Amino acid sequence: MRVQRDFFARPMWEQETICENSWCPACAEADIGMLDPAEFEEGGRVFVEGRCARCGGSIRTELTESRASE
Ligand SMILES: [Zn+2]
Image: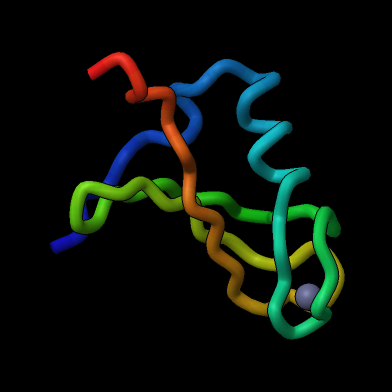
């Protein structure tokens, strides 16, 4: 089950960092950039999905949130 989250509630620096640290399987290249990011939670994991800034293909990044202290 997907739970929609508000990506834009994150601080600007974090949004930029997440969008910059992208991986596009079609381009087979990292850090191209991501457009139209949308955040959601699935199975206890958090993802940001968007489009590759170069080819426009669908890309997804898993966020590793700092839950080490929990
Ligand atoms: Zn691409």
